[in-house]
Length: 65
Image (cartoon, rainbow, N blue to C red; front, side, top):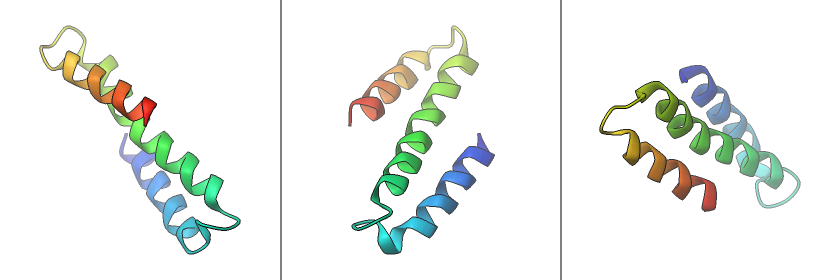
């Protein structure tokens, strides 16, 4: 989880100077992967824990936005 977050942050950092021109799609994909991966992984890892519904809501909200 940490490696995906760090890699996504690195890609976003490299793409940010050109985010509104040629590297916009690269920035957007890195952002979406970072935002969807975290609650998705936690959703699987939590199993039947009471916070699982919270992570499901976070995953749906991140996926729709």
